[in-house]
View 1 (cartoon, rainbow, N blue to C red):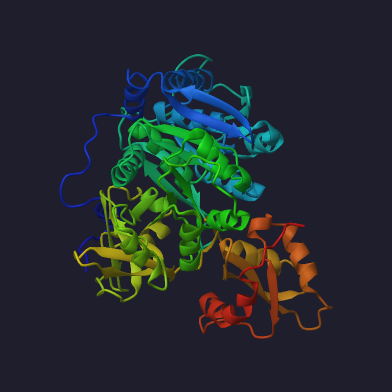
View 2: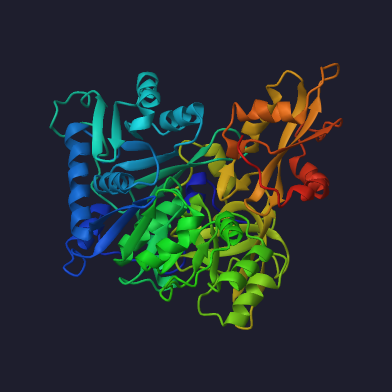
Length: 569
């Protein structure tokens, strides 16, 4: 057992490895940023290309540097934001979003990214819990943002964005300062790679989302690991089709290309009919996806013969359950390798990948010869292990909990001592995911994820808390008991069903009526797609609902819906 006694000691231990840590030549994100935008070999090269459907706009490193500096000046001089402040964002994939992120980091301001489609209550909770000083939103969400400005004590400013840049600014000057002067707020400490860069709120099974605190060093370290693993260089062009309010989009396809001096092709949304065309037109070398997108591309079944894709080296894939069948069908159909990996917001992003240098036969072995596709080997700068309930390593093939430690592990959950106590034990970060490992002929540990010890639902790479869905189901007057449960789904990895027990004497209630009740209160993605009625209320003797047991019991019934495409409306 670990001799560490305090939560702070456990977090600190989980964030270290034996040996030297990655050494960076910069003292702050701003120094890192400047090193790229003034590099004579990069200034005239394209860094950012943004597509909104067919409309294309691009920035060289020099032009991107100018845009970021102008925005950083606005944040400091007009809003009075300073090192240590937090800027919440309710934005989507857009060139301006990338500029705002980088400008904040250059100013020592932390970003709190929020999904545009979250409920107003969840957005309000995140902004208030993070103690954000300012909120940046798109022009379509002004009214909602101004309401938050009235309600949340820490929030001083709302910045409204449009395609052309800052549309307007609402709020006051920083307390005690006149416009154009440095603020009194912010950290008294100088710039550091250990300063906060992101607070990413991730859904959990214990109610409200938890804020994962990531530092500048976390971002650079994972970018360095991803770069070295995939041997990315200045000729590489990465495409982003995933949302940049999530660490996958932020770390893999925003920070990492900037780190290795390559290019980023940012798409407003994923569109299967534009995917291969865009790879061809931009000569993309790698793209990061979730398993859901592989299914959509398989279904579209596009003829690629007219495209020139010789530079395309494959797809990074993670952030959700990948079916062995899906992986093999995709590679057989399109001929491009899936660079399968695994990670969490709490470990910055990716912690492991299948090695790229495997022979085709060995790659297929690790991807397809087990019940689950392997998530590969631990990346540089972090370590992985499968531990039992007492924190002891288990032998190959034995299931336990996937645990991670190293320089990519987060700085804990913001203002959540209870969550930190549970997640950081034995000097490791406990993922809550069940897994195992097998060794190859060289003695290397190839890891697998086999399920989740926690009850989180991951639909299309997005974490969804079942408790929120339970609450909406139970808000119907005819419902006595309800529990959201995931089931295996071809397109989304997991979809959502609900097990419901009606109140005695309640009038008749159909599944269609209850589904409609949920969809009026939840986004389509978070709403149940299947309702199963029953009579037994599955509680343990201590009053806890047996969600995992219920999921297993109903799996055979829900298997009938595995390939069904559920449509909104």
